[in-house]
Amino acid sequence: MHRTIWCWLSSTKFLFCLLLAPLAAYAQVERVASNPQELASAIASSGPGDTIVMTNGTWTDVVISFYAQGVEGDSITLRAETPGQVILNGNSRLKIGGSYLKVDGLWFDQGALRSGHLIEFRRSSSRLTTHSRLTNCTITNYNPPSYLTEYKWISIYGEHNRVDHCHFAGKSHDGATLVVWLRDPPNDSPVWHRIDNNYFGHRPELGKNGGETIRIGTSSRSMQDAYVTVEHNLFEECDGEIEIISNKSGNNIFRHNTFLRSSGTLTLRHGNEASVYGNYFLGEGKSGSGGVRIIGERHKVYNNYFQDLRGTGYRSALAVVNGVQNSPLNRYFQVKDAVVAFNTFVDVEETFVIGAGKSSEQSLAPDGLQIANNLVVTRNGPIVEYEDAPLNITYASNVFFGAESGIGQVDGILIADPSLILDQDVWRLSSTSVAVGAATAIDFVTHDIDGQERDGLPDIGADEISLSPVVYRPLTSQDVGPSYLSLVLHSDQPALPISAPVVQVYPNPFRSAATIDFELKIPGFVQLSIYDLLGREVAKLAAGTRNTGNHLTTFDGSGLVPGIYFIVVDVDGLRTKHTLIRH
Image (cartoon, rainbow, N blue to C red; front, side):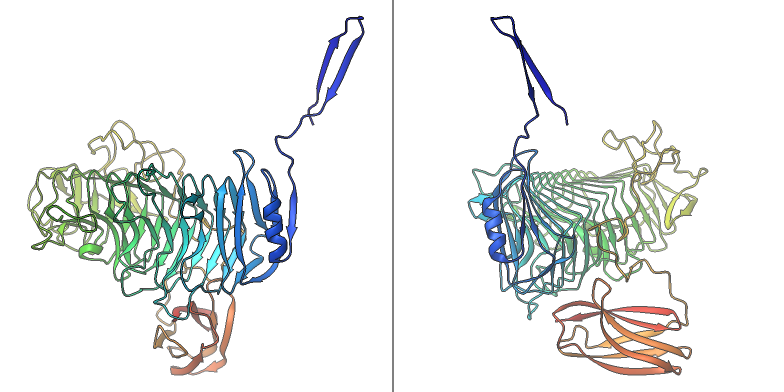
């Protein structure tokens, strides 16, 4: 501890000295709560720098009203005694209301609400939260009995708030997983939130609108600038609807995220001037998997990597949508002055669909579109599809290979083999590629998808050949989410051999019981189990030797809460996983 000595000379020539210990700006107090009453009391007594600890165990039907006021540098923290060991269920929910607050390490599991918000950053409609953080938390299978019941899992209000290193999986009912809400005029300044390093996973198709994983803004507030950053998140099997991310405001950034086997797109639905860069869209051949859909003005989509996507039309790798004349806020504004540059596309079903959605209503073709420095290698053509002829389109320094361009010989498109090499599941340029040093420089593109600096003669595509360290890579479940989660069932399994068991389930989704039909190509010792999203075994249905052929078993899942589960068939160590949805 540093101490300060103050000395002074008195009028009688005596020297006086005073030893002072430094004083903290605020005394820091830790309060432990073991029940809802103690928790409410601890919150009410808390001040800047204090910590409230919830003891380990299951907390049922607890409404946490975390209303407090910290200060910059001295936040008030509400945390689990041990991260991940405070489980909230029933109709538990959390309201974060105030400034400089932090919630750390809570787990909401297998509960349900009737409406509203599971976690919301506000005290009331007029008292919004600022400079606060939700971190290291988990929400799994928090679903009501009916999938048509609508509520959000996370609603961010106020400004300068952050949601990071959390795990959200298994939402199977109506309502976006996470929503950023903008303020009404006249207090409609940007909100500056940050959503980063989270895992968003396993959201089944809802069958209607309202299945977004993230939505930023609303149609009515879409002309407002939000300045929200969404970065370093993994989206795995987010199939709720076509809009995995629904951007409905201006000047937002989407960077360094990975979209894995997700049926849908990052959709710039409303608002202008979004920046989409450094993202990986990895479809792995999944039906409906797409990339980016552009609507509105002055968007920038660059340094992204698209591979094995099977979406078409609005779900294509890069869809540029036709606009509506004098569009109302909830329809389609004309695309103007968009830049699509330095992207790499490998084996996608449809690469560029321009004028997507053309109709008697959507009659305004994209205007001023710039397509530059993109690298496309695909067997599926045509590479460029005009559903409507664009206005004032510019092509510059693109390399296409493997299929017809679709628009004939056009300046700015070179048909040539770019000589790609496979490097840790990502296709990159070889040193002899025609794309090396052949790009047209764009002033705002200074680095590549890896975070390496581009030189004075940049390379075409998302990757720049460089000896500098790689900063960003495709994300896996081990890179994101809470530190305490160690998933037993990882998604990044190797391809299954032809002898692997084949699993079919019907009905799926199911309500009370499901029939599981698994076909064995070779005889062996079979273990058939049901797991939840965190790899916990919830039922063992078979354990014994089985011959080749088809085997049927009925699973009674009426005791499970609605959500996502996995059927795992293990035959002598050869494991097959199949998703099971309980409504």
